[in-house]
Amino acid sequence: MKTFNEIMEGFMKWKDVKNPHIKKKAGSLLKSIDVGEVLAYSAEHGEFTTFKNEKEFAAAQKGKGKAMKWIKVEGKSIDGKPLNEIFDFKAAVKLGMLDKTDKRYFNDIEKKKWKVEEFNLTSKGFEVTVMSGSKKKSFTGKNPTEALKIAIKKI
Image 1: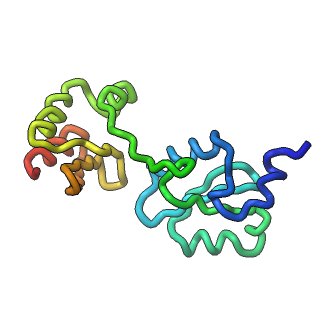
Image 2: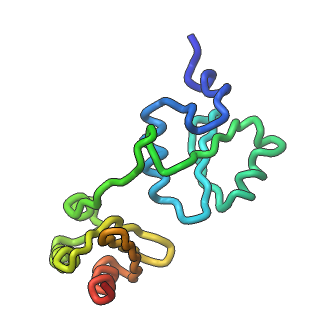
């Protein structure tokens, strides 16, 4: 019987990977990478690595890097379904990213006919992305409350 790593040796593209556990892990990692970064899966070691850019990814595939059997994780999807998860305030509170008192800011955003699509921690600070129809705006603050206050003022 072949192991999963032996089966993976023949795969050259991300769409050929069918393991749901790997796809789920890739989905969570894709949401956390910054613009321009490349997420890759090593079929040899069964782990993910984030590269700063395409050039660094290409360099990792040369020389001894060929043995790693790198597969570039393409697209922001899991099994063809886009990652369009709705932001959940309760889950963010449970994770400790937001405080219960921040609920009033979310209510103010919804009163203005906008919805919070994403709330991320980036290198610049806390970033809240709001959407109304096809309009999409992002606002950054030093802490979560500040990011929400800035979003309310500017929308």
